[in-house]
Length: 271
View (cartoon, helix red, strand yellow):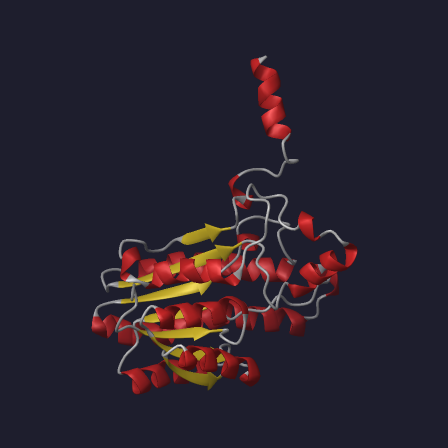
């Protein structure tokens, strides 16, 4: 369909998971891609997949939480492709799976740096050339863990709540510029960050229970999140701004319930 034909896009966290799936999809839809990650090996695999499919891609190793790197990301996109139309600030880390009382300041600062300072720097440096062009789309990866408590590690969840507010606040600050800012709130997606959950379930023989609390009763895959990111970055979402789009199989749409219990309760009420 070429929904991104002629667009120049940065995608961070592109070495794996949602970032890789998005880089490949955006390129397939016509965008020139600057694929960014701290992990060179996985990044090269992403770039190779795009090149083999006939796409246009440049790969860059960078730390999104470092301001010099963040500034260079935007500069490299502009230098390589002549501008920047979309920035998908997707890079993130889960942090340690520990009670909050056991977190060190250094652990907290690392999660905060990647998950929240990274998107903040993306807005800071991507917005000016977009404003100058009169249009642009910035998309950030938040999480359902940023919407309600007990959906993820405490520090991780706090940073993702910050990303949601960042999208809303940045969209308001960029009023009248033509630049849109939105976030995605994925539910349980099998990526490198969550692989241990899936591996543990497979070892226990309980893989069929993954995602059982959402109405679709399954986990999501990176390619599904890439489709949401593509929509928000494309002109199809030209009137979508300052929102956190939830893609979680319906998990956050209602209180958790045992499968079938609501239907049985409703049947008893009508008897």
